[in-house]
Amino acid sequence: MFPNIPGSKSILQRVMVLSAHSKADITLQNYNPCADVLEMEAALKEYGYETEAKEDGMHFRFSIVKHEASSHRYRFQESATAFRLWLSLAANLKGARATIELSEILCKRGYAPLQTALEAMGAVFGIEDKLIRLRSCRLSGGKTQIDGSISSQYHSSLILAAPFMQEELLLPYGPAQVSLPYLKLSIQILRSFGAKICKRGDYLRISRGKLCIPEHFRVDSDASTAAYYAALGALRPQGIQISLALDPAYTQADMMIFDILADMGANVHWSDDICTITPGRLISQRLDLKDAPDLMPILSILALFCEGQTVVTGIARLARKESNRVLGIRRALDRIGVKYEYGDDFLKIYPIADKDLLAVQLDTQYDHRLVMAFSLLRYRYPQISLTETASLKKSIAYANLGLTEP
Image (cartoon, rainbow, N blue to C red):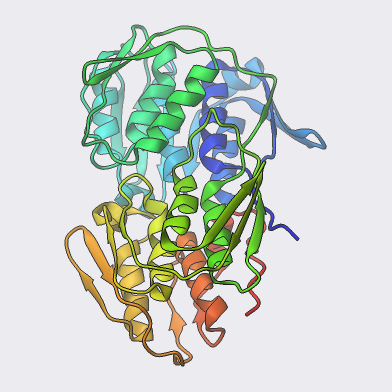
């Protein structure tokens, strides 16, 4: 029995916003109606799309009548990716006025660098508490500056909007950029739809021009969800087999989990699109997760079952995710009595010494990545409980990890 790996929400949200930029119809196969994707879907409906679920996928049909009648009032509660990608679209509506209502958590996670870049290209922002009022324009494009050390989503938002600006966009692209695979994914998808992108010095050059949005698009399996099952396979005596539908043209950051597991000592074998993971003698590693921050919770828990001390680096900005994930992991390690060391941008984790852990409850902070990580620990220690699991719906539509029997 293979676990059900949903479609990648990272790919889905990028393709959805590009379809909206192009006002194009599209049918999305392997659609993942998780909470984050549903927020983007709601924005598309407000923008002027009609949707229909059929056997061959989710159909999105653009209606010019609905678009022209739209009040362009958008609401984002959970998905920072959906909001940030949509912000450049809303700012590029050529004279329209739009409002975006945000939850408190999305306000805290921030968008100031993207706002500054959009204002420099002509958009006018009015901020009232958790409400953004936008006087949109046809964004000018040109050479812009934006900090890449906080989030790749700011860059991705501008990259996906670039073909629809007045001039080509020149965007900084340097060594300080975090989550580089996510940025590369935006570039890869844009190129596959016909955009012209090249690198000039420390800048990306994205030409303006019409994209060729496909009528049907098959979404790759979600590597972030697969990472949980892969780590589970390294602990489960019988291992696990995972079926992954992947297009080699698209890079997902969390696919590095398979190489990390192999380096740790797990047995990882690929046969076409089937990956088999079985346990091995797990040895600690030094892991730089600057480019794959979503792996930090799962790998921090897996470190408890490795020989030696695992050092995880590149984690400072995890305080600004759905929760403070570093704090969430540290609190869990404190609860179960595991030794660790913490610094500005690293966490050194020692293996579990006590084989009989107390029946404690771990606080997930309503964060789906912490739920996955703590579920991995609960697999080995079923006496451990979690404060909730419903937050899994943020990335997995049916909120069921399954295969958790000891």
